Length: 471
Image (cartoon, rainbow, N blue to C red; front, side, top):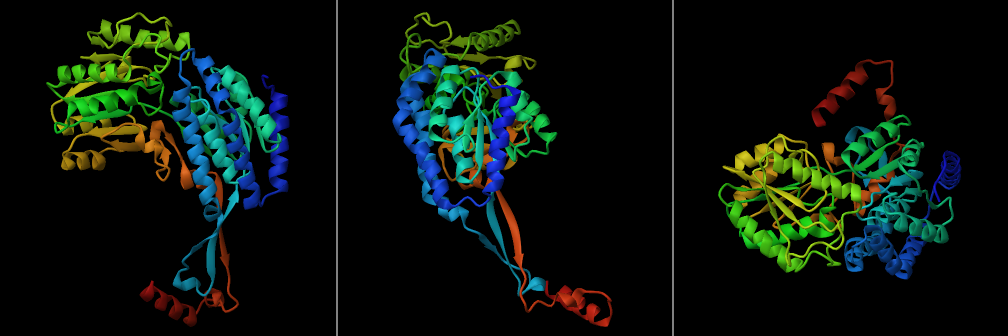
């Protein structure tokens, strides 16, 4: 059901009151809330996968199992195992001039966390932040995407059955509802989506001084080093690019490779696609583009690039015409003009520009002349070249000799930098992102703070002189 401004306010007020009435959320209650989520996924995982398939038109339940449900089950397992440790106060060392006082960080819930989730992985990117927020002891309001109505409706139903509205609730609606949602005075607002919308979310949150985590996107480069085996790299690049038909925030957005290897890469990529997807049309493992509008945008990007002199290599194993017009065959784009939108806009589809470089320094300059990407990929065996790239580029995350995999590592924070976002989550990093680490100093009865009190005189000068020598 579409939310109204009154609905949003009522739900927020209930969660806000509940969060202030129970500031200390014990371990047992946090674990019980997470176990409810685990039972929800076990009982309704298949129904959620079916809802995602309905929203996309073509997207296999197996893809949702691995990319959405498995990720969430792994997150829950890790969180349940480590939550007690994460919640404990953390002792910190005390400087000499404050001894014998002691100090620690007390980890407390923030209160009410708002989550705005996208359509591309609508279960994982909705429930992942919810799980993390619950682990941190918070109440959660979730606004899922209107582009996946079946999934969003099912999430509202299932979460409504598993949680009281003042624990977790789901609100549905279009962009207008999302704008009103972002304007609520949350204790933290977590947004996953495009950079353009992320700017609007940050602006709305700023009016309330609401801290935000923005998981955005951008132009994630894939560097092929001269030392790379093209066939080995091509299948990993094809998998990373074509998972969910390229509708992945950390999908390789373009390839940088040594000049002269373009044709060889095109052939290797075509072989890799044929191995992964023997056919495109009607293949349930090859997802459809989410909507006609998004499909039209991708076609317009190709048309503009071709009109500017680019050469397109359509990779369509089986050569059958798509029965679903939104099941778009992969396309490599060569000789792309510098002013092409393909090189400035995040693609978010199965289109992969291939750019040649003359030296590694040239490739690094290309990356550094643009906004910092969410992900960066490097393929090769030359460790000196690899370390040169790692040292001289800045990105949200990196996978070496593969794609996407850094996001699956539970102990690596995931997040962007600059235009690709700010704030990290996953594992303890996510727990801490949605936790207030309150500094506490406990003074000792033996403290001699009076040595620093006025009136200042000879004794003060002696104490300060001693401290200057020992700090």
